[in-house]
Length: 415
Image 1 (cartoon, rainbow, N blue to C red):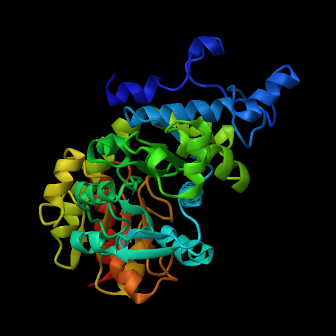
Image 2 (cartoon, helix red, strand yellow):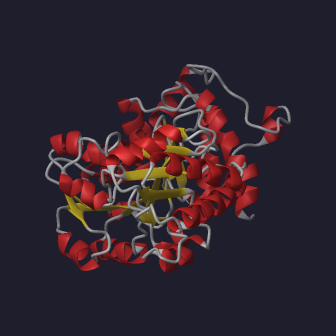
């Protein structure tokens, strides 16, 4: 089946739910398998089934199957309560004290904050490298390195790294490449085709797209043999399961169960509805973002605009090859000063000043004073954040109305 069809039909058997066209919400904290023997088998992993909502839930499992189907050929997906819960579960599964991680410097502020404030306290060292410097990435890998971490489209630097080069380095070291695909989703980028072992997404963003719920997704693409992973936890799980499902089993049975990042069935239901329109929405997000970026680039009072659909972008050619000329719904632009950035934001009438992105509505944000406010000058530079930068998550509105809104805001804020 093609992507749009999988997004609509994968994940559940409607005949098992009275012919329902959408997966119902199963609102139950616990489940009875019928006998104590059956309950023991489920807890022991000898049989499938539901026993407690923190572990599994039919609605959440349907969403996991739907999300896994978006990454065609994937082993499976584990859903989490937020994108950051998904990120932290990956590092819980794959790292321990004394290990190292090689990461791109072009990162979402929340991920960088997790590295600085949480992961560093566990004794794991994060080695940050310019994603465009492939030789530096290769040199950074040591016998202690357990994974490479990268964003498919940098937020907010708007860069597109050489994923194939990163995946080859990971393969040479026999470790997995973890790719954050939040900004592009599987609708734009087929991660498995480029050697990516695991994708992680904030389902809160474009994947759901309606701005209603938080969620996170970790998908095992099926590329990596977890029996060969050098880390202790997953290697031990691989020995118990005897299969390459070890990573997903660890995420669900250990990381999610013990850290409490379970997704609510109500939120899973709304996220599953969002998948129905993902392919269509990414078309509109992409075309609107490019049109708005072209308008902003044509203004003399806008020093620079970053959007990979622009021919002027250093990453335009690579983005076209990876994303098939749908370049995503995000852009950034500089205003000339911090004061003017605030002036523009305060005058917007359609675009909303909010911290989310990937909503059906256009959202605008000054990053240096919000998400990235605790970062060092070096981290800000690596992420492409300046004090006059505005990030725009371009929504599904009429592009004419959006351009008019930014025109009046820019004009009103002065030069």
